[in-house]
Image 1 (cartoon, helix red, strand yellow):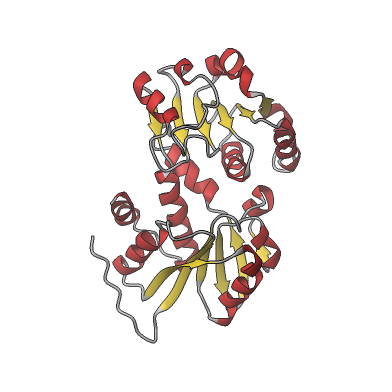
Image 2 (cartoon, rainbow, N blue to C red; image 1 turned 90 degrees about the vertical axis):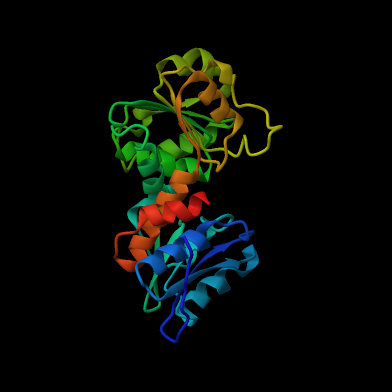
Length: 284
């Protein structure tokens, strides 16, 4: 799809703050969505150093930027500069979308919904499922929040430092009083013997697999054909290659990227996002 943008005095500005941000795919597929719906808007990447984040957030008001996405390393730090937070931001403790209403900045997190919409392409019914989540960093909080909302049975959360998992359990107790019964901390060396046989879905939220020489988080040859495997990295990682070899359903991070972007678009514009147009541009 060819993106055509006509610039005028009515053109609205949207963008993404990150550091680095040149690699972001969001400008292409967000601008294509604006163009498709004849919304006079452009979406630009803004490289914002951590020490300049507060000034960058103020610039949203000064320049009347209608909305921005927030990516690493700013998702947590940006919260302190906003006027209002959505429910999911309060739990996940990270913001990836800001809407500007006449200088009043509202923070949202669309990663949780984006993840679930992608996962449901593989498994529409998540209620009662047992899940293995690899990692307990910022991305995992959005994934766990979304899974709890879907009514899964158990979340076995593996991490090198289990204190992070216990912190997630504590933070989510106000979301569900059963958080400490649903979320089970598990060391990586117990995955193969104690977790893999009983789980339906495996989700990697770490950066392991981004580089080919990364050490596997567990023995991927132990994956079974029954497993659904998701890696939020935007490539076919060794984990996903192992899943493919076993005949599993699997998915990389592109659906999550697509759907979190679509949700942000809908928050900003109040219009249904043209998901298929966005997908077409993203896959190019």
